[in-house]
Length: 294
Image: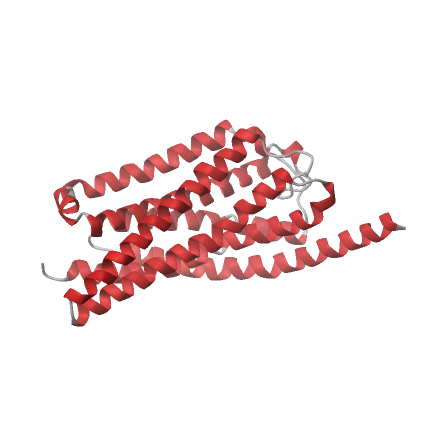
């Protein structure tokens, strides 16, 4: 009788989760596609690119790739897809897009911190700044590609119940989970928090020396940086907690872990929307500053 009740509860939970995913992923797809296209159109109209534009474009490219494959995730929420080689590719792409976004946001945070903390160094490297930015973006994609290829067996179709639901018994390997948690999240989030808070502090401290438009601009940029940092923490913290719970969980908590991880994955996808909105406004700010006479 207890097993029967547990089975009914599991079915109800799974049904509710899938209904939630259907609505939420459709919303994320529509909003994300709209704002990413709008942001990419702005890039296409740019007459002069800076290193900041290159970082932003790389971030939007990663987000756009995630949005493109989202309809398959929506289809899976309606009609669960059996594990296949396509699923392995989709999951690899999902990991690649997420960590490309994480590493690019980290690079942007470092870039902004250096620009305000060491302005003379930034000016000295101005002629090479775009080359450095392009090299960093290429390096990010190369590293992520190598990681995905070397750990492909972790996403093998035999380890999944459906295309996106991993079997609880087939946990991620210790080296891979440590790589994701430490290199993929812990180090980036610490760098982002340090660089963002330091950049905001420097901008706020400089407000006493400026007036008028410059003062408003610096306050707005500080607000955008704070919003970007909070967005990163909110979007990517739950999914990495979910990965850790999957690794540590046992059968007695599988329902909670299943729901938590799927909701956390959805939250991570919302970053595709929030990035395009946030960096759209930051891009406009940067363009205004670059157009001013020095």
